[in-house]
Image (cartoon, rainbow, N blue to C red; front, side, top):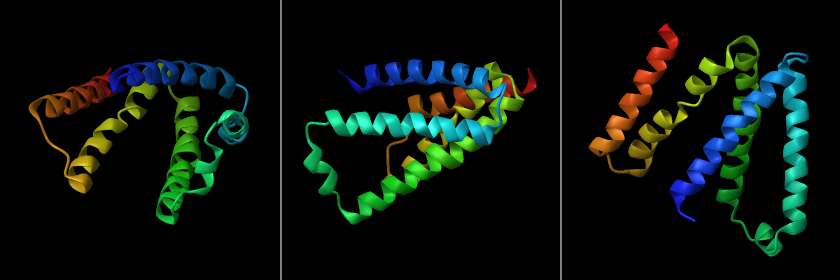
Amino acid sequence: MTAFKWAIITACVWGVVPIIEKAALSRVSPFVGIFYRCIGVALGMVLLGIFLSARKELTEINLRSLILLISAGFLANFVGQLMFFHGLKLGEVSSFVPIAGSFPVVSFILGVVLFGESVTPFKVGGVALITLGIWALKIG
């Protein structure tokens, strides 16, 4: 399967999840929400560990990758998700989620600065469209 197809599937899954979370957050605090959401993540990890055919790979990770991945998990799945839940509880899912989902702009900039990735007219155009979309959602 191509990266593009994986991206479309990811977008579909990530598009459904905030609807589920918004419904759940109507009756609980963001702190309770993140607690129980993390139980879902832990369950997924247990299942992955059971069915992962290459379990040996889990012990063959280098220290740098281990620290970076744990840090990324903490930032994305705890810090970012907690901020996301606060905003999702307060705002409209139809405008909050697309704005919060504009993180590719940050990733684009950091990819160029930190990894020397290419800047093409299509990438700049995509970033411009995302920025225009954020502006439209903010004023609308």
